[in-house]
Length: 285
Image 1 (tube, rainbow, N blue to C red):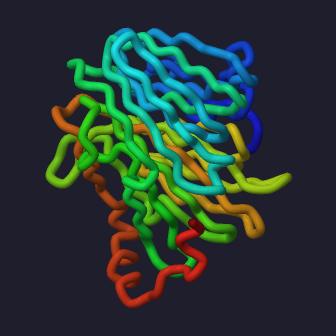
Image 2 (spheres, rainbow, N blue to C red; image 1 turned 120 degrees about the vertical axis):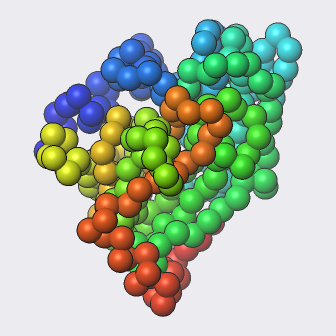
C-alpha cells in the first residue's frame, strides 16, 4: 500500500492546514490524547496557537524560532534538518497561548497531548538530550530521548526521535502498549516520518494478533502513521536513505511510563542481540 490514506496511515498533504503541512487533533485521529502539527513559517512570520486542554512540545525540524507566552519566552537554536544534528526544544503546559516566530523561516513540530493538570514551561538544551543506541546489527537505531518519563515537565506527553540508518530496521522486534498489565501501559502513538535524500522511502507495519489491524505501508517524508493499539514494527529504511521518525505518545494512566509488551514470537531477538555488535555507522551524530 502506498500513497492512499487509511484510518491509520495519513500520507503527506492529507492533513494540511493552509500553509502548514500537518494538523492532527485527537478528534481527527479518533482517539483521546495525542495530536501533532507541523508548522511552516517563512522568514519573519509569526503563528499564534491556543493549547486549551493540551500541553505541547515545540521541536524544530529545520530552522530556529522564538516561542513566547505571556509568562515565558524561549529561543530555540534548532538545526538545519533532522539529519544534521540534535535540537533543543521547549515545553508549554496546558492552557498556554503561545506565539512561534522565526526570523529565518523553518519547519517546527508541535507535539501535543491532552493534560489533566497544568505544570510549568521548560527549555531543554540539545546538550542535555540523552542519546541511546538500541538493537544490534542491521536492527541498530539511534534514539533521542526528548521528553521521556525521566525528563521532568509534562503531565502526559512523551516525545522521542529515532534515526534508522539506510538499510536498517527499527521499532523491532514488534511491540505494543495498548492495555494496563504487568510491564505494559496503554499509550496512543503517532509516527511522523522524514526520509533523507530525493526519492527516499521506507516501510512501516502495525498489526494485531487477530488481524483486525494489519497494515504494511510505504512511508515517505511528511507521512504520519497512527497506532491506537496493536503491535507496531518494523520500520525499515531503504538502502541509500536514512529514516527519521518522531514519536508522540500519551495515555490515561497517571505518570508517563513507557512500558511495552514484545510480540512473543520475536522475544528471542533481545537475547540474540546481546552477543551481536551494534552498527558501526551509529551514532550518525
